[in-house]
Length: 458
Image 1 (spheres, one colour):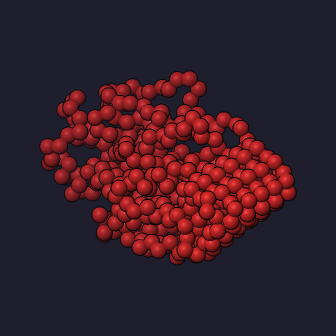
Image 2: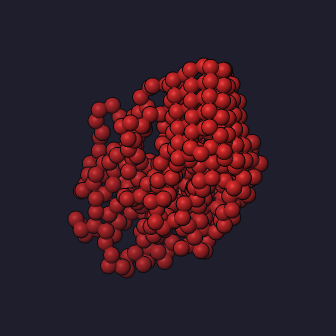
Image 3: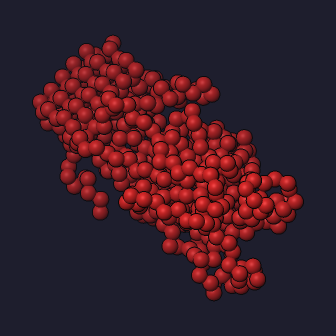
């Protein structure tokens, strides 16, 4: 465990959920329930398990109060410093990090609030420390959905974003990073890369988990270069590509040249410097990470990026409705199969009122009311929800203060905060938006039921 401040931790929780606006209108993405825990709980407990005592949680100004209340109820041991940023929902991840740079004094770990995984962060930190890396990124196998898994909402085939991740087979160096959408048919690999890394694989079935360990000099570079808005899409690919470059002659000849006089984007090597002792140790050591030539270890590279690939663990990012619904369906199994961690997903809250005798694999949150003559299977019932008699619910997510009246049939649906499902309604594979009223006796399949203006982001 890392009980000291060798690394700081930053949880990015200010995003508005642009890929799942049906769920996030009037609700903060980081507080969407997964199991019976808010989404932001999962990265925080991951940090806590690794020994982190403190974490910076970046939120948007309008979220600060609600997030603070939610974190106070979670009984986490890790201390959270909630930092509110104006209009954080509209900013990129790199922008958010840049705006809080004064709070970061060491190398640091960045994790997205929508990452749900049981990996051991200590392994990633150890890889970073072993090579004194610039950036180390967590890569997970892309989640595979069962053939019978149905995402609530319209039947449009959702094509997940495919990352192209090039990793040196011998050293684990991250040498190529891009989105498949950036290319039409072919990928051009530079001769420099092929000469330097003679054996590598470009993976298309790995997922960039958006968990990075970052050297402090990278933050200094980011602060002085406002052209980078996102970490994954812009900054990280740029840093990875610069591994193939060497410091310009002026950097070698004149370390005292003012950075104001140079093009900072082209002069990253004014920031990418090794500590003298680290450089001396590397040069005196017999260690070498390659055997194809007689060059120095790491080919003398000052910029070094690595990928930590994890197998045998679960992990996904809940940044779409599909992944959010899948996470809720699988989270009880994932936690119960994790022998090293007691499941945080309690079945029935002590403050819930349960009159039903037909409940199977369900989780019921605080102050929920389940009437008699109801049947519930494989569903999550949120706090203060009401389920009236003669209603059947299966494979569904029922959020906070939802009211489901008598004789309703709900299958494979997501019912958002405060919506009302009136008597005799039948819903299958649907999403019902916040505070929406589904009228008595209606039948809907594969629809998003909400007010149209609630799906428009301004």
